[in-house]
Image 1 (cartoon, rainbow, N blue to C red):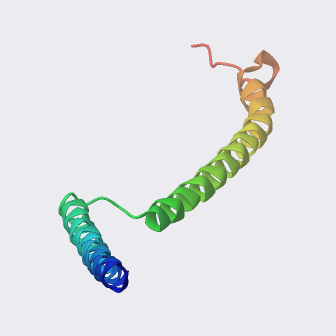
Image 2: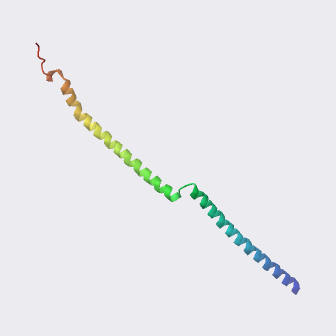
Image 3: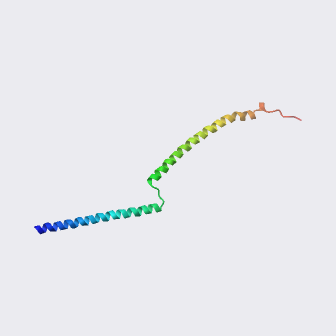
Length: 103
């Protein structure tokens, strides 16, 4: 019986060693694949998620500012149009015209 226990102990140690080797190999393979993917992504000039979100926030802010400026410009144009419209009518009204000199 003692030899059976020793045999099982040896098998357990071998299995444990093999499992450790496989685990180490798995970790090494994951690291290698990660490095290759990072190299591939960097060669494609892709942006990170953080960079994308930062630019997206900047674009949203710029869009809001542009809409605000467009509204402001429309109000300014309306004000200018209301101020210049009566003067244009006065200039073309017949009562304000100078009498033409008849020869």
